[in-house]
Length: 347
Image 1 (spheres, rainbow, N blue to C red):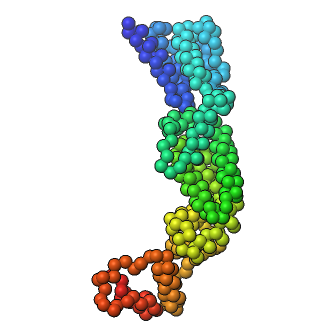
Image 2: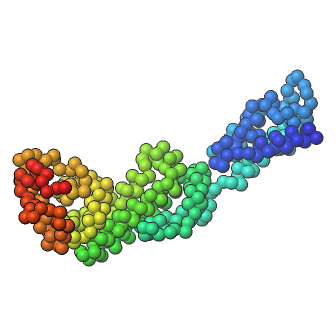
Image 3: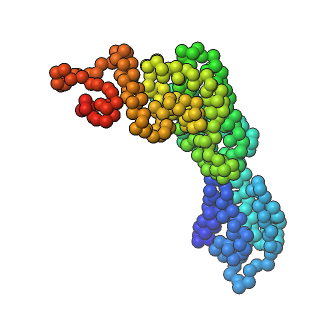
């Protein structure tokens, strides 16, 4: 009974391996390389206690790239030459090798089973609207990515991901080109927001590929690569049509909502900061420290800009609010001294 329990323990140990199969040799293969001294107690009991190790051929087992052992003899040959100890070692090697081979993901498996799942999930993420519920299993998608990376399909998966998103962005660009001018800004804002929102889910799902392939071998980051795709395939193609419309909308208050203007300007700055030079005044309204610091000699100009803004607001139906608490006859005056040198009227 003691021998059987020991043999079962050795067999279970040989069958336990990591999910990515990189440590499968820790079982029978590892003990085999260490030689007879490292064999399980059950093997030593089978061949009897002796001071000298049993005579037998030495194995020069070297694993190939595909996980198959090179130089290992068949179980029958090992039994003929090495006795009971060689039989146990051969069984351990065969069990580990069989388990490894059964879990291999071939390139055909990747293309027919794993990538279609990823492709469908990416489609849903790229086309979702803010607040939509996406009926996908993030755990399942992450597991697919993990297994493909472990099986050395990272390069193919990265190539497929870039191609997939590039095709999507080219369709988005064509739709924007067909948009009328009065809808152009809103549709660009929707496309930008939808894509940036999708990246918040896509990048974490592919974090294992990013860590062990993109960062390690390409010395890049997945999020940066995907933002660059939007810059190249959408923003660069539309910036010279978009910027004049933004400047026109800025000169006409509330032609578009302030939140839309802010989203687009901040998004363009994120994609390519040098685009600030195309309209510094526009970007300075939403991005701090764009323009040089204010100087005292320009205070009159700043006051004039404030007066213009107040008039525009009043023309569009905005009032000053409740004036009942003001003293009789007191009015806000906007000039260089009152607007910039004192705080009178601001409570």
